Amino acid sequence: MTRTHTIRIHHRQTGQYYTVEVPEDRYILQTAENQGADLPFSCRNGACTACAVRVKSGTLVQPEAMGLSPDLRDQGYALLCVSYPRSDLEVETQDEDEVYELQFGRYFGKGKVRFGLPLEDD
Image (cartoon, rainbow, N blue to C red; front, side, top):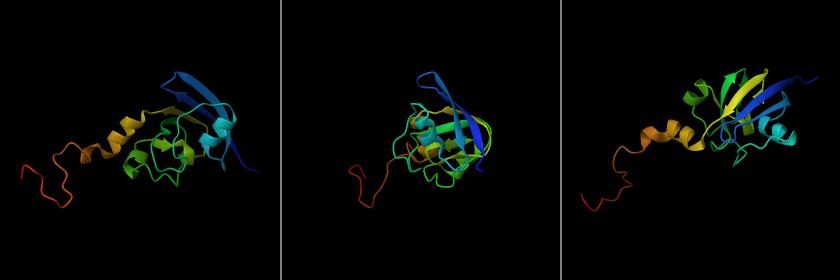
């Protein structure tokens, strides 16, 4: 028998709170939507950060979360579209741009990007 966990989701952008029951063998996002939650998403395959959340308490696994660096995972970020609960959870949606900046910001704004061609002012 598959264990089921209670997931409390705070959708920061709308102020809405959802409490859903998710089996350990089901993705949190899809199961929450099936229970009436209206949450942000885009690709649904773990490649972007539209469904990113910060885990406030509890444990989950996300083996297919290609869109999150190991560093961000270690900081408690998760992608609901490819996350499975392993305990009761409390999570909070994040702004996609903020997560993207945390993950990739150090690579941007550091000067001109070169792609093998000289820039006009060189």
